[in-house]
Amino acid sequence: MRDEHEGTKGYEGAKHEGTKARRAQIENRKSEIGDMTSIGRSAELRSHANPANVAGMAQFGINPHDTLGVSIPVVRELAKRAGRAHALAAALWESGIHEARVLAALVDDPRWVTEEQMERWVTAFDSWDVCDQVCSNLFDRTPFAWGKTVAWSSRPEEFVKRAGFVLMAALAVHDKRASDQQFEALLPIIAREADDAVSYTHLTLPTIYSV
Image 1: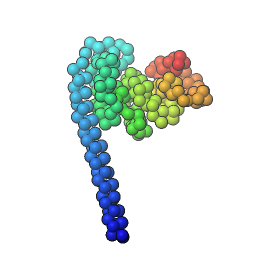
Image 2: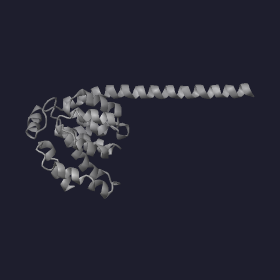
Image 3: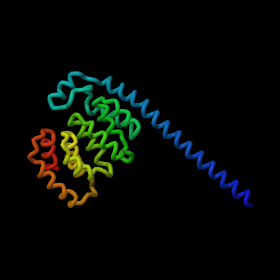
């Protein structure tokens, strides 16, 4: 009986290790697929490049650097076809292409977003539209969103501070379970920054007031 029991334990242990190995293989394969798909998505974005749009976007304060001039409806259609894909989002973000970073926000899975990722991305914001797209389509759906409204709104970096206020507006729209008290606690922060001379932060405040 003892040998049989030990044999069963050995079988179960081997089975468990085999399952772990298969899961690791699947995750690695997912990562590889994400990386390869990012090449295809970036190529498709480039196929929709429109230099005339880049010039028009610049007039609205959008950073033209590494920008292709792809319209948001096209980016959203690509995101719809791709579905949620965390590895793909990471690869798209690392490409540095303006529209690829917007696409990354649309395809990333908020369940897999870490606080470290949020800090890394927010410090890389270099245009108000990327800031707004990431915060209102991804970051506001993470469990770290409420804490970042306070932390980021106190930071000196222009787009980091803006991100804090965009999160406030996004949470007001998307977080249906939040209490009035949670939003009331943000009012002193909004009042504190109402006279901020930083243009992109100042432009965010009317949006919050109108929600």
